[in-house]
Amino acid sequence: MATAIASPDLIQAQNVKQAQFVLIGFSLFIGFSLLIGAGRFIAPIFPAGSLAVGVFLYLKAPVLYTGFTWWLWFVSPVVRRIIDYQSGYFTPGTWILAALLVTGISVVGFVRQLPKIQQQGGLPFILSFMGIAYGFVIGLIQNPITLQSIIVLLDWINPICFGFFLFINWRDYPAQRRMIEQVFLWGVLVTGVYGIYQFLVAPGWDKFWIEYVNDTADVPSFGTPEPLGIRVSSTLGSPQSFGNVIVAGLPLLFNGSGVLHLAAIAFGSLSFLLSLARAAWLGLAVAMLSLTPLLKIRSQVRLLIILALAMATIVPLVSMEPFADVINSRVESLADAKYDGSLNARTDGYSVLLGKVLVEFIGKGLGGTIDTAGTGFVLGDSTIFPILISLGWMGTLPYLFGLVLILFKLVQKRKYSDEFNSATFAAILGILAQTGFNNILVGIPAMALWSYLGINLAAYKYYSNPK
Image 1 (cartoon, rainbow, N blue to C red):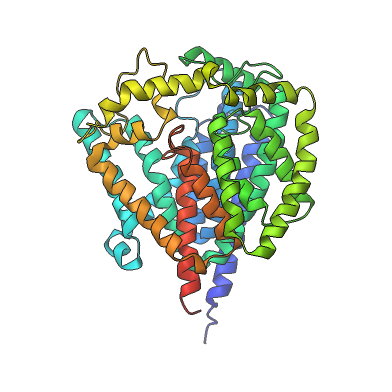
Image 2 (tube, helix red, strand yellow):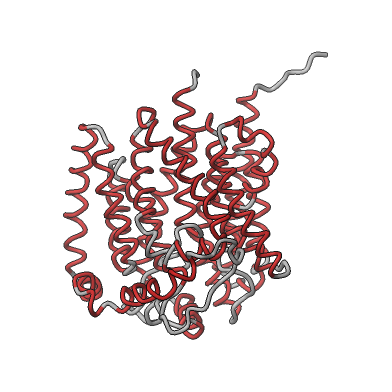
């Protein structure tokens, strides 16, 4: 008896349905557990379960894997805060462990395809990957391998491999594009709304977390754990991380239209200002200024109309108390650098430490550091210091060469771009503009940077290959 053979499209549709069922089921389980106060019981389940779901999605529905990965970067810090608050203590592990583990699945895929990556046009990814691998080896030579060293490795190498995952799945470019657009539409809206709630109400789990951070930090930079005193980080792990979600997401929103897009722009922008993350403010300004000339005339007119509507919504909100005083005092500090403690600390740190790191030929390996005592400077307040200390010139040069190769190719192939690519390229420039003020090679900035590099390369390959 002949048996019917399912078509590839039917199999793919069945895989997507199964993946959606697993994804919804896991999300409901975590949400219900937190709702009934069972955080202490799911402390190990959340990262382990996220990893299991991530593997299933990666194998069955790569587009859903993209969305799930990004949502974990958005919400896993606040889920962890609620778990810790309900547990009554800070559970072990990094705040973004679930996101790191799920993004790390793409590392396995990258390593498996190493023999044929160059033939697929992935040489820049290999170069940057080699730079990180060099730093990891140097770190192992100087210190024994630990769980923390693996976490640091993932933080550096995950963005590159995730960007390659988006690139190598270039045939799915239209679906991946739609997924990223939807992820950032809802991501900016949700984080924006929660950010305002966080600022006005200061929920218990956020106060619990900020008290801990302020007690352990050399310089408390998250505000005070009380209503109207918190520097908004929203669902993310820091104000700068949240700020870079907006830098990555807001340019995409101006490509859309409708009430939902306008609401996301308004709430996201207000929370963005309440983050007081001036480096991210600079990044968004660069991104938006870069976006207009990248668009066609018709799209430029639409952008200006949406921008005018957004400003008409945002300006009255920013002018209201209790938002006005907090935002205005931060804006005024931009005009008076003499009394800007943060800027002065960065300037002093550069003058004292730059000479030391410029001679780091070999580097100290991933997780390496230098003594910054007396400078008031944090190494993460720059990209230059972490990359040269961790990778040395031996690892930094291939890393940066890979990055520059992709940027050069994207500039050359602008004719293969659409509005989405224009928006993501503008966001790339906004992230790169923060090089002197934030470490853009780890965390959310690096994820957005390499994701957008990868998806832009995917667009070029999709549009330049016959269907």
